[in-house]
Image (cartoon, rainbow, N blue to C red; front, side, top):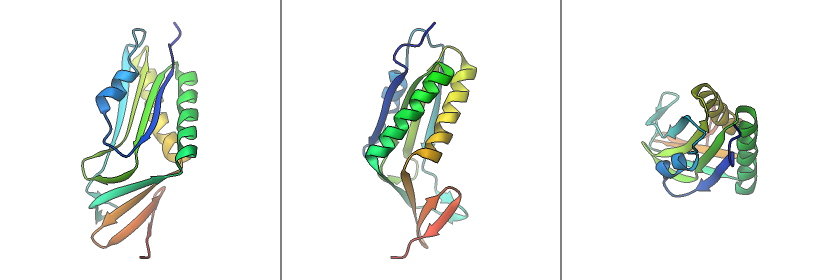
Length: 149
């Protein structure tokens, strides 16, 4: 059975993510599984205390890349996909990215959801800055570069 409207939502926001709304956006009667990834700001990174994070993006390109990722996941796994990423300041414990993927069966939902977050981190022009007691660090992949301020 074909999935109706596979790419449901790709959004950037400066407000807290409404996780319930994102999850409900992918619901469909033909889908028996929903896999969710919630990226949450933690209080440490690379052995340093983290006070808060700031995310910046080239928004038009970020949205375009998110849409491409969602479309590819929809095609590969027969999935309904919703992705929301926050921008701006986020304190410890806040959700920075939320992805929901619905498919007829759980295996596809798990695979597609993991692929979506991994691919988002690789392709989408969103940059993370960690604010720590000893300074500010821009994060690129696994590298932290201290800001000169």
